[in-house]
Length: 239
Image (cartoon, rainbow, N blue to C red; front, side):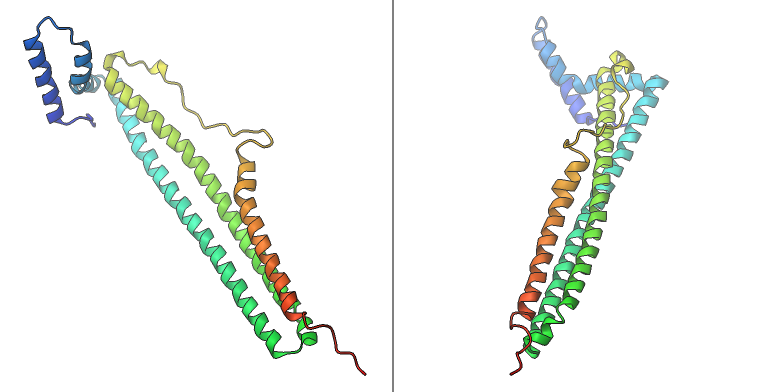
């Protein structure tokens, strides 16, 4: 069970309180007591809690839940960060692949005449379109997972802060602590309005931005293929 204060801090507070009380026996020390005797009172409360099986079990359970929830929150934050890195890598591979295809198209245009190369434009177009589909689906899956992780992490972090608040209140108040003052903590209710924060935030602000960027990027590359392979005119006119 964690007292929250070191022995030196407790001893220093008590010594300072006794010195001030000795020098000023008639002085009202309400504010000084609240500040200097807080560690001492906390220890007194903890001794009382230890002797009371109900409050002792409650404090131990809240401390256990705090550690458990903190561990879960940290793991979800780490997993969310890893998924974001995977998205960056996927978009990077997609860009590199498009660059390789563009390089191959440029080399093809230099090696053959415009009429014959224009008939081959659909090969890089199909490759680029397939790469866009694969990358888009991959990004959507990872962003969906991140959104779920972040909502779960927010719920668990809220629960962690609540058990910390309860444990601190019990240490601080001791016999004055009342369980009835703390409501049962439930999960956050997701908004259901059409454009409120929730699923529309995910689709528009996250996936929508990535989808639009990759689509524009892909469209520019496809247009480049037609310009490179078909800009030398159609078949030569026979005399």
